[in-house]
Image 1 (cartoon, chains in turn blue, yellow):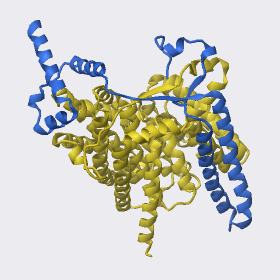
Image 2 (tube, one colour; image 1 turned 60 degrees about the vertical axis):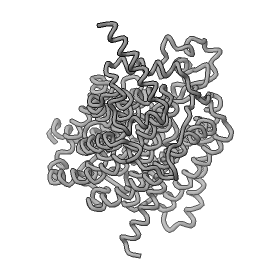
Image 3 (spheres, chains in turn orange, purple; image 1 turned 90 degrees about the vertical axis):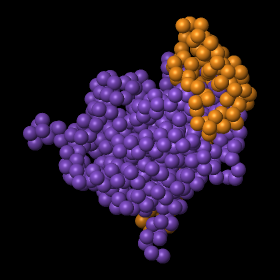
Image 4 (cartoon, helix red, strand yellow; image 1 turned 180 degrees about the vertical axis):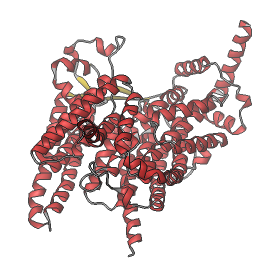
Length: 154
Length: 462
């Protein structure tokens, strides 16, 4: 993700920066370094050891190599599980509650597109769906406001 | 047990595995479909899974991931992957209106209907196109060259991507010559390098004191998880009741149209057909939900068609999806091969009949419909919360680093690992700085192995 000048996170100096955005999400660099080492070592060890052991039992070297790869994959998943236990996610998750300001803003953005439509013209199923969601009155009220504005402007 | 019964059992088993695995992976926001589906499918192929199993695994995985990536898109407000980006404006509007669960339900109900429509239609179109197969196959070197240039122009980098193809193709030709001089010939490592490129480039960048500054953040990424309300009884929701009649109609029509196209990028088709639907729905709320259902249906149908049509009709990866996430179905040496000297094809195209593709394709969509669809409808909120709270990004990166090391070592030891690192760093950096995306790079790889030898022959007269 790009740093925009308006981004408050980008304005802070390097010293205060604890996290880094890698491959689309935030990580702690120290944890990341450990995770990369853990992932690499466990997966490769599983693959190489399984390859050695299977070589003695499998009917051909080709089959031994292929099954060793399966063990390598299990190693990857194991390493991932271990890292998930060792390192907590660096995400800030809050439970959203409904915010009326956002609703008004969303309606305004929709109206900006020009065509808002009339809720009463909608098929009965759609009207019922909107009533169930508590959006019916919101839209009808907003449409009335839009019509008043239009009348004033013309 | 008859051979057919055995094949069906294998297909169902692998399809279930793909559906469950990628239903879970889809919940992790930002996981690109190419970087996840391609390497895992590759592994499935290399482990010697029968053709029907490979195909069912891939399709069930792709449809399931497409289903569950709608969860972060709708509930967390971050695109599940690149295919979800065109749906963000409508999803965000509904989120701000306080009804993100409606966005999610309209999206995935459109997707499941579209998936069922697109499989038979894609098979039909493939059968219609198949007579042109021999002509297409014999001129493959030129078609791939044209495809690489075309896909590059339509990538975010435009002309920069077209020009950057020259050094990128040369890099692949050069690496192949080097490894050949040590008696090692690599195929999978290039795919893996391209697919995992963005991660490799980011890991390099974060080590460099200069580039690290760009990536540092003072706070963890913050998400607001929106509330959810269940509105049907039982476990299995009915997509035809979630969408109203006009929405079902739009989804069917747009999915059918996009099933016929296999050369355009799914994102472009999604944007275009979404606009067509949006222009015809008058009411603002109804427009949001209709466009979401249609757009997600289109991206699903295009995705399926782009993989199936080239696979069934030609056996050559002639579309962005076929060259990207579906690449291992076409080329996974030594199991599936496209011989660059003779043009001989040995992959699912030669191993399965159109009727088998249809049958196993429907099994795959059915499995995704039975697993991913009700799962995403019922448990979206708790699943999104679990993934964000319990599964650190470090753990995901550790898993993929391990995967790269194992597959690389398997194919060609330390030399293969160096090739993956080289292709990944160059490719990933070009993606970030120029917009030369992974689809273009896959096409560049095919241009390097198929077009370059033909051009060289012409130029030198040999």
